[in-house]
Amino acid sequence: MISELFSLKDRVAVVTGAAGLLGRMHCEALAGAGADVIVTDLKEDECDKLASELSSKFGRRCSGKFCDVTSVDSLGSLKHFIENSYGRLDILVNNAALNDSVENSSGSPEHLRFENYPYELWMRSLNVNLTGVFLCSQILGQFMLKNKKGNIINIASTYGIVAPDQSIYLKPDGERKFYKSPVYPVSKAAVIMFTKYLASYWGKENIRVNSLSPGGVENFQEDFFIKNYSMKTPLGRMSYPNEYIGALIFLASDASSYMTGANLVIDGGWSIW
Ligand SMILES: NC(=O)c1ccc[n+]([C@@H]2O[C@H](COP(=O)([O-])OP(=O)(O)OC[C@H]3O[C@@H](n4cnc5c(N)ncnc54)[C@H](O)[C@@H]3O)[C@@H](O)[C@H]2O)c1
Image (tube, rainbow, N blue to C red; front, top):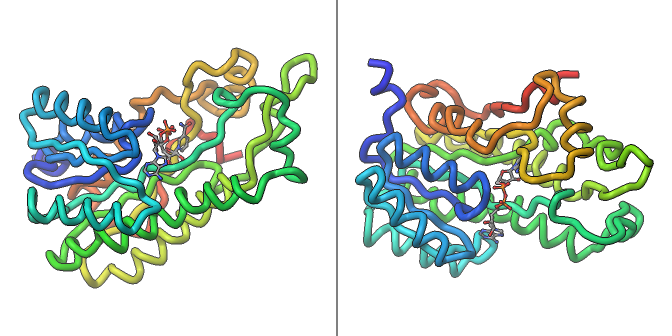
């Protein structure tokens, strides 16, 4: 049965960065497919709220939990919680990241030029986007090693495959609003390689590791940017936040049982030309 192939009934999943734009979608999709979801983020209240909404909506046992993916202690206490409350972990979605974006930037973009880009921002983003994926996989992957079964999905980006085109941040009158940072694409490229490393390393342990690379999500950006982005996309638009859930459930379920080390690109064609 096709629905069984995609079912996550009775599996236990963790999503990091779950209070964000896409993290919420991942949690809803996983719970909707039958998983018990542990909703984790720095924003504990939002995690609790989302977990209780998902529990009522889908009748699953969902929990909200604080987790800083850069902290070994924080991950240790999440592991302890999972051990005591669920006793297993089947799916880990490494979604937390710092993603500098045109919609969240203000003031002059001069300080974002590569020549001025602050070392502190470089280190902070590498720590969350890359070291966080390493730590979560190492610490929470222990459940999977024990069970000889597991599934890790790392959220990367099209900017892990192709370089940012800085011209899309120019307004029609030539005014520059933003520079995409050097650290975001570099961290996402590294996540794609880490995915391959771990898929190879844990293949014999029956733990699959894949990455999912979304394209840009429309999220109240200024019209000029949406237009510039859309012109560079074969499908002629940015994505909606819910356009990754099908791919996520595919990767998380037995529908992708022979897939590991792959990078599933869902970007409206952005990276093909
Ligand atoms: N939105 C996009 O256009 C887009 C495109 C491609 C890829 N992505 C990727 O998708 C994922 C989700 O993006 P989003 O748009 O939902 O981002 P978002 O900024 O809305 O959410 C990110 C979440 O991560 C959390 N977070 C930050 N630091 C953390 C830490 N140290 N520990 C735990 N949580 C932490 C934040 O609190 C936030 O809730 C990211 O990996 C991002 O790089 C997003």
